[in-house]
Length: 111
Image 1: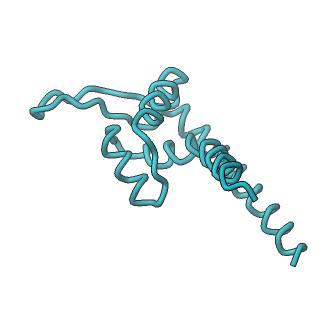
Image 2 (image 1 turned 30 degrees about the vertical axis):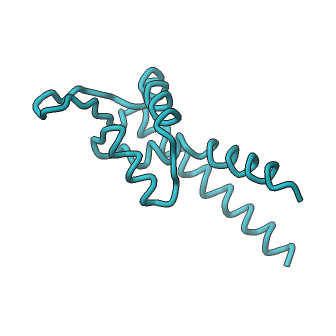
């Protein structure tokens, strides 16, 4: 089997989950670089050039709120899930639960 095809499919699979995962991690105020670290700790590595455009898109879609903290030596833009984002997150959680139950059922049937 072609490893490149497998790697691409895994990358697509993970990319599809990124919004859900970022919203889960944004329930507390967090800045981008810290989020990269948290995702890596969770076993979900993400490139900065993937994360930052995603954060801006979620902010534009009103799923994340942001504010600048200029009190530290280095200004940082912090993100936190918005009310709309929380509503979307609840829907995504329900959908994730439903999908994983269906996939688990299919896998069990295939044994």
